[in-house]
Length: 365
Image (cartoon, rainbow, N blue to C red; front, side, top):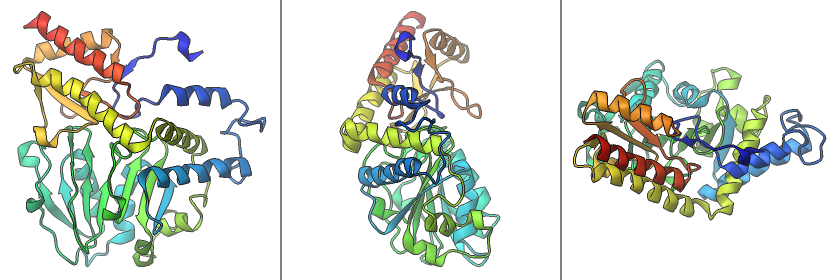
């Protein structure tokens, strides 16, 4: 049984921690799913047993995020990285422009793909500030006839997060919310298009959630491959081809868990409390630890920091690993340290890590 083993303090940036109760339920149902005599991974995606799983996951996501009726919810594959291409393929022409707000590596990747299909430009960028902050609203510059403006709501590598989102008026606002969707309340109606890989807050890797306003489908390009059209998946309720059935089952169970513990407001409260523990250890260290993000742009999902000395940083990471703190290394492109405190990371794990940070400082100053 799972509870016979010591669970790791999992700070992995993705795939990341899943709720223990969800894992235990999946374990119980793995061989015989609800009396079918089959695993959920063996069910036909056309069967009544699986369709109920599929439809329930959509219903729960709509309920928890208060998604309006004029939006479609799709379950796709290929990760957020495929969305970088699918979005301009569907919604951009060679004659149109689209603005990308540059806040980190993932917005850079999305922008690079958009340039292949049309006139993509930087609507704002904080690269010169080493991506330490989110742009101020007044820094955004875009055109009233743009196809869309694209933002990345949370930046896993640099540890920054939008606290509020701009009102782009008649210009559709698109958002990559892969690393903070369902972590706090937000107004879905401000966006025309939202997408998120599931592997951080929603479930295991392999499922990508897309939430799009239905009127976008009427304006989408048609001369693209069938599987790359959002209309294909919308018309078929994400069942045009075989979906990642086990991933969607797990996503539904994670959504059930969120609902059972009090919904998105309770999740937001817990996330603030967890992040406060670790940021507190950084802020009280008198420069022993140095946070990367400016305070008003700090992420509640990815806490990034450096130590005052590179050798000391290596020692810190080695000792953290010995103590069972997994995934604390910063992204390979920037180094440093990072604690990813997604929804399923327990308060106790964050408390233990903050205490480890304080102890490490006391013994190495």
